[in-house]
Length: 186
Image (cartoon, rainbow, N blue to C red; front, side, top):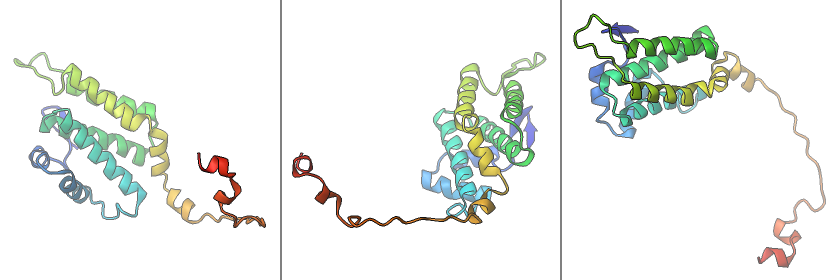
C-alpha cells in the first residue's frame, strides 16, 4: 500500500486503471479484476470466488455512489487492508474497525495548514462508505473468519460421513398416490 496526498491508494489498482475499468461492462470487469487479483481458480475455489465477488461488489458500489477514481482506489485499498488483516493477522472485528476508522479519519480530515484544504471524502460519502463496509464485511465477519481458516478446506475434504438408509415398503409410492383426490385437485 502507498499513500498519495496522505490518502491510502491501492497499488494493484492505480487511478488510471480505475478510470479505464469504470468504462467496462460487468463481464469485462470480472475478467480484468480476476487477472488483477490473480484469481485463476475462482470457479473451483470458494475462497477466491468469495473474494472476487467482494472486490467486484465494492467496485460497483463505489462506481454507483459516483466516487471519483481516487475515492474508488481508497475504498478498494481500505477493503483490501481489512481483508488482509483478517486473513494474515487474524484480527478481531473490533481491532479491524479501529484500523478502518483511522483510515477514514485520514480521508475525512483536512490539514489546517492547507489553503484549499479538501478532504478525500465529504460527510455523506464517508457515512455511505462506513455503512457499506459495515454491511458487506463487519456484519459477516464470522463468515470471513471461517473462510480464511487455513484448515477449512482440509477439514471439508477430509471429513468422512456415514449415511444410514431406512427401508420402507411404500417408499416407491409417489406422493400423488398417497394424497387424497380432494387435496390433489385443489
